[in-house]
Structure formats: C-alpha cells, structure tokens
Length: 548
Image (cartoon, rainbow, N blue to C red; front, side, top):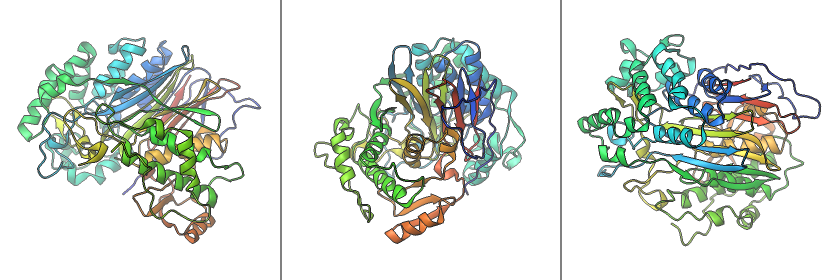
C-alpha cells in the first residue's frame, strides 16, 4: 500500500517576491517557502533544521548538506543512513566549478551467489559508502569540523524524534519482513507491533556510533570498532563483507554529467547512476517544440513518455561502473544523437517496443534527496539510499546501524554485471541547473525507476511552463518505461488527456492523487532577478523547506 502525508514547511525570515520575478506557486498543498540567504530542503523537517543550523552558524552549503544527510539517516531510517550510500553533486559559485562525489556502495570481494542474490538479509549487503562520502565532501569543500556537523544527528538519535504517519505506514507495510530480523524489530516493532505515529523513537546505539565517527572520522567505520561489529554480524549470519572489504572502500570524486535544455545548463550525477540518462531525455525533448503545449496536454504527455522510453532503453544498455565498463558518454550526451532519437518519435503513434541505440563497442523506492543553497549561491544536490525500505533489514547489534541491500541492484550480464569491488548502477540523478552561468536550481528525488521520469518532469515544469518550485513538485506525474507496458499516471491527470492517450494506444494505469510511487522531490530555486531562495517539498512524502 502506498501512503502519503502532509508536509511541514517552515521558513525563517521569509522574503517577499517582487513584480517581475519568478511566479509564485499556484494553489498547492504545501506552502512555497522564500528566504533571502540560505535554504535547505529535505524529506524531514528535523533534517532540514540540522542543515539550517550549520548555515546560520556560518557554514556553507556543503556543511549544511552533510549535517542534513547525517540527520536524515536518523529520522528517516527506512530510506538512508550510515549503512547506505549515495551521490552528491555540488556547484561552487565563487569558482564556477562543479564536482560530484560518488559514495555508491560496492560489491565485496566474495560474490558467490549460486542461487542468486537474496532480496534481504546479510548476503544482500554491499560495502556502505555514506560515511566515506560525507566525510570526503566535508573535508574537501566544507568549512566546519566533523563533530559540529554530526552533532544534530547525535542529538536526534539520543533524544529521539516523533514518528510520522509516513514512517509508521512504511513499517506497517513491511511488518512481516521486519519481524524476521530481531535487531531491527526491537527498534521499530516494540512489543511486537509497529511503532505508532506520534510516538518518540530513540536509537541510542546509533547515537553512540555517530559520536565515535564524530571523534574518529571515517576510519572508525571502515577500520575501527564499527567495522569490527559489522564484520562480526556478517560472519555470524552469512554475509559477504570482510574487514578487508571495508578497509579498501573509498569515495570517488568524479566529473559531473553536463547537458543543455532550452538555454539552461544541466549538471547531474555521473555513472554508475542516472544523470546521463536524464540529460539524454531532456536533450531529446529539446529537439521538439513544446511551446504551444499546456501542462499535461495529450501531445505533451505522449512526447515526454516517448523520450523517457528511449532514455530508459539506453540506460539499460550502457550505464555501469565507469571503473569497470566503458560508458559511451560522448554519444549519449551528443546533440546529434538526441536529434536522431527525437526523429523516431511520431506525434500520432506510440512506439510499442523501444530498443537501445547502436552502441556496438559497449556492452528501489527507499531513497532520500535533499537540496541546499547558501548565501554565496553555492548549491548541493544529494541523493542517498539503503535501497529497499529498511534495506537488508539487518541492524548491526550494538551500533544502531541498518545496512543496505544494494547487491540486488546488480545484473547477471552487460554493463551492470556483478564483479568484486564494482559499484552497482541505480537511477538516482541529483542535479543542478544553471542559467547564464549562474546557479538557478538544485533538484532531487527518490523513487527507484521513477527518479528519471520525475526529474524530467520537474525540469520541464520549471523551464517549459515557468512553474514555481512548489507547483512544479506537486504537478501530477506520469511514468513510461521501455520495459513496461503501462503508462502509469496519478489520478489528477486530466480525464480528457487519459482518453486521448488510450485512443492513441496507451495502456493507462491510474494510481493515487499524490502517490508515493512517484517519489518525494525536494528543490530550491534562486530567483534570477531578486536573488531570493525559493524552496519546495513534496506532499507525497514527509519533508520540509527551511531558510533564513
């Protein structure tokens, strides 16, 4: 069952938009937030507050993003945490440079899975990257000490936080699976029943682990006593991760993906994740005139769905860990290739089966995103995950850390085939938009395969339809993929559009009005005329925008 809940939106010292600036949001469930200096948007109010605490103390966007990322792993334990992984894209306004930090999880050296990788349990766990990635970002691009940015997360773990209806719903939906794992069940199934909304959830063991990391850095996690606890649990329960696997893990700084869409520059996450495919889809759409289309018109939905299918097909055929496979980025990101793909799209017919392009030389809903802008215009877009809700369902005793089940995201052949030390691909695509060389927007969303479709719609809503960020986030979503028959839409899709699409040959599957299936986006825009920071968060998930 998919659940959603009302978002809390908070602003500190909000500024007023002036005439001629970006249009305010249309009628939305949640208030569009405006502030003059810095802003944090995340999937939970307390994580956003953690980031804002750093900004108000003089920290930059990276300090705030790292604080919020550590905190979100405490208050949204179903979606991310120390036992997970992610990708961060950041843009430094002063030097006009962009970079990406890849802290995707990696396969251990032992990959013996004669019956296939299990969906949960210790054998499904990959080497976590979160601690390495966040500490690298802070050390290279932040201004604060690790102990200072981890302090809010420690406080939340030890003092507790109030369980939301959304978190309760995820626990209820996964009750039978969680109940099989005693350590995790003891945390979220007190007395054998799901912890109720409104109850305070404390995780003092996680607080202790965070204190150790704050004092000793990443080495405590990858070489010290936390590593020992993880390896002990792996050895006892049939996991594959060894002390050597943890000690050899490194976060990697990579060059972001770049592309263009209707005069905006897109800076997105590089392989092994989905930024190249997002840019490809947008550059296909860039070849097609949508200026006369209304949002959610039949032609608009059809053309975007066809572009999405092609991006998904090429993702499957080409994207993998760039340290193991040769990803054909030059072709994927070229305007000529986008034009050729756009030329395949017919206005009067659907493409029943979309195949990948000619690349002859080449062979999970539980995620969270956050966005940060500081007073200098630096931006961070960050997406992290433990893969499935509650990951592998493995909570390492004595640490409070829930481990990922990322090993299931490998394939058996092609660019995503499993190999020791390799990073599996996923579709996360945290992205930053620039206009005329200046930062314009930072965007991200969870949602498994729907990440690429949702990110496409967010950019299109902002650029093609000049929506405010909150309106862009709340607008009805749809999802089309090369490998799936249905066009999946939210129930707010206009009836006349659905009828026209069915007549065109689509099989339409209608979901909820604000369906968690489509993720939970966060975003911040800088008004190019006033410099105001304008933030939005998704009513499909618990989240908050805060600014000062």
